[in-house]
Structure formats: C-alpha cells, structure tokens
Amino acid sequence: MELIINGQTQVMEQAETVEDVIRELGLLGKPLVAEADGTVLTSGQWVSTRVSPGMRIELVHFVGGG
Amino acid sequence: MEEMQMDSEQMKERYSRQMLFPPIGEAGQRKLMNSSVLIVGMGALGTVLANHMVRAGVGHIRMVDRDYVEKSNLQRQMLYDEQDVINMYPKVIAAEKKLRSVNSMVNLEAIVADVTLGNIDALLKGMDLVLDGTDNFQTRFLLNDACYKAGIPFTYGGAVSSRGMSAIFVPGRTPCLRCFIQTGDSGGETCDTIGVIAPVVDIVASYQAVEAMKLLVGAEDHRRSSLVTFDIWFNRFYELKFGEPLPGCPCCQLKQYPALEWKEGEAAVSLCGRETVQIRGNAELDLPVWQERLKPIAREVTLNPFLLRVELPEGERLVMFPDGRVLVQGTEDIVRAKTLYARYIGH
Image (cartoon, rainbow over all chains, first blue to last red; front, side, top):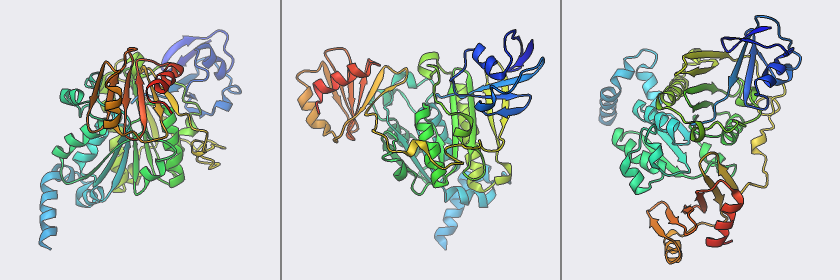
C-alpha cells in the first residue's frame, strides 16, 4: 500500500503496523519518535497501530551532534 | 543612586535594540541581567548559544566543556580562531577570552571538565536554565534527569549533516526528553562520521537561544510547545507538537531519574567517531611533573597552563588535564587506550 512517510509517498507491501514500517526502513532501536496522522505514538503503540493506505507517518530522528 | 543611573544608561546604550522589542523592554532586560544559565558543551552549538547569551546580557553564564580547540572545529565553532588551535586552549578558556571582549558587563565562568554524575549538582547550583550544547545522548539524559529533579528548564538542541532539532523542556509543564526517546543509539551518525554544515548549527542554537530568552523574561505564553525538526539542505521542516508526558516516563512521571543512579562509573569512554578514548583517572595530574617525566620517552611534549599534550612513540597522542582526565587520541579501541594509559601513566 502507499504510505506518506516524512512527506514522501512510499509503497510498503509487507507492512501491517507502524512497527513493521519502522523495521522495514531499518530504524528499529534508533532514537526515533513516530507520529501517525498527526498523533504521536509511544513506542509501545507502534506494534498495535495498523497502517492504512494514504496514512501520513512522520518518523522524527533525534539528532545527537552538537 | 548615581551608580544606578549610570548602570541604567549603560544598559540602554548597549541593549537598546533588544529593549525596543516590546516583549523584552526594560523589565525583560533587567530579568536577563539577573539570570544565570549553564551551557554544557562548547562546540558548535555551545559557541552560538554562549554568543547569544553574552550579547543579550544574561548576567551570569557558566560554561563547561571537556575538550580543547582543534583545527577541524574552526569550520563551525564560531568563537575560535587559528591562534586557539596553536595554543591548544581548552574550548571554554578560548571562549571566555573571546566573550569577555564582547561584553564585559556579564559574569562568565569557564569550567574545564567532563559533566558527570559526580559534578552535575554543583554545576546546576544557582542556575535558572540549562542550554544543551553536548554531542551525545548519554550526557543529555544526565542533563534531562538532573534538570527535572532540580526543577530547572532545559533546552535540547542537536545537529548533524544538514539536519537539526530543538525543544525546550520545562519540569512540571512539558514532557521531558525521555518521553520521546528511550535510547541514545544514533547508529553511528555523528558529526565526526557523516559531517555537519555550519548553518544548521546556527539555526538550532538560535531556536534554543530564543526559547531561553522567552523563559528568562517570563514570556511563558509564547513558549514553543513542540519539537522543531528540519533539514535545511533538502528543504524540510516539521514540528512535532508536545502532547501529554509519556505515562510511566521514568524521569518526569515516575521520578526515578535513571541517569542519576550511581553506577560503577565507566572510567573509560570512547568519544564517538573522534578516534579518541577518554580515561578518567583517580588522581589529579601535576602537569609540569608529568612533562618532565614523559619528555625523555615521548616524540614531543607540549605544555600550556591547561593541558599537556604528549606525542607517543607508538603514534597515538595523550592529552592530559589537571583534573585527572586523559584523552588517548588516535584510537577508538578502549583496550588499546587503557594499555597506553597503563604504560605511561600507570595506576
């Protein structure tokens, strides 16, 4: 299905949940906040939040440099 | 009375443009002058933060950093120059020198140290606000937890590549850093591995600085209650609105402050991507004595009032500080660094 990830349309065939999306992108375990359709998810909610076509997902990477 | 008038005249002349800005005004300027802030880390973010705080007339600015100025810093760390590299000045010393010539009306405190569980309480004492100029999450979690415990607001900033983000965390009012992230693994993406461009640093630090100014003048209504994030090269800007704190957050909800639990301290840490291992010794180092001791065996030794640099025959370099810290440069291997430390410094 098509998802809008950080403003870009991306096709994700396998992903069923937000956690799947994050895993497919290789970002599990990184300092990251996920937002789905404008709602911030706790990391515990990633696995229970199902993705649907057209869902807007923002993955905000925490930046460590200074 | 005369003195006060003079003080007022000087203040008006120096800060006139900022005082003409109605949300600050004369009352706000006085609040800034009566405020104290701590800047942790005086690298790219820290130098911009300090520059803003000093020019804005924040009365007391305490700066702490563990490192010294190197040539690769000059591309973005705006308070340093080539002479500081030649002099091998610790960053806070070089910054203090520069900032004193910018504004002699503010009280500057320069502390060469690593921020740890052992000194964080003393560093926070008397501070109204903490500005984050660090380059790692371990120290940020320590700041986050210590600030929330002490009830001191903390502005987070981070920059790498062309990406940056910033937020202000206020105990009792906003979520904390731990509400958003539980791990600090940046996947090896640091300024020293994938680089950083200077403009993003200035923008991030300026977001932090303006939130600091709002907070210090009491402009609570205008506090940004979101995390701003942007990529200035690839033209993306996103604002993550703060919600409620994370239920069960170990810092701001359960008040367990994990970073403040005394662990058997890691005496040796690899400074990510820097080819540097820092080893914290147990005893202070008398640098002139060590200079004499190591001169016969080293390729070169250089002493200044703040540190001793020793070029080892093995190719690595030791940078020794009076507080007992030693940077082993030229390796990221902790075992190798400990071997060299044991060989030349012992204990």
